[in-house]
Amino acid sequence: MLISSSSLDPEEVTLKDGLQVTIRPIQPSDADHLQDTFDHLSIDTIYLRFLSYKKELPDEEARYLATVDYQSRMAFVALCKKNGRDIVIGVARYALLDPAHPGFAESAVVVQDEYQGRGLGTLLLKRLVVYARAKNIYHLRGNLQVGNNRMLDLVKNSGLTYKTRYAEGIWQVDIDLAVLKEQA
Image 1 (cartoon, one colour):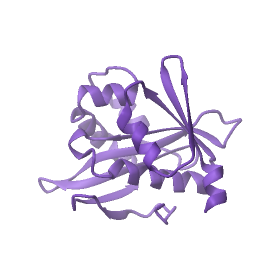
Image 2: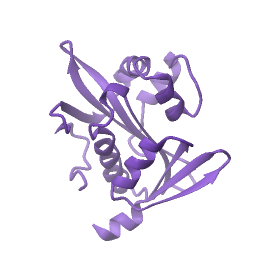
Image 3: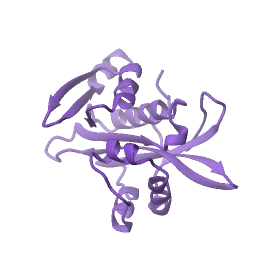
Image 4: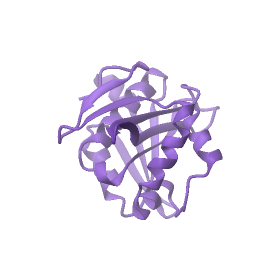
């Protein structure tokens, strides 16, 4: 089931284990939160998300990732309270692949390791899909490392129409949002 809102309003959700989470559009002020989130990712999660090993998320990259235009680049963050403050525990994003083809975007989802397996990745992906469709994006592509079975399972279990192909050492997963639109 898709999240019904394609707006920019924050949405309160409850994960499978009862944890209360807020999903909202990313803001430039979230750059520091993204760095904190990165610091809490395992080396495996970093490798699977960024397709390479990285020791840190530099300030400039964090600012870039936290600053979107809500059309060609968009991201949603999932926040929960920990020790009395909001922390980012997951992010879903897309970026147009080529301005000449505005219906195609690359997408990615990452969830902090300790919050994986609770349904958050699915909620973030579905929120991103609804928003992307509202912005006339009909194809999302994710590039996955071979062995990233959790992300492949997330797509498989999402109910979204997708195709996979192996290219240049990675799996390309293409989600067809146009088919989804016709089914809705």
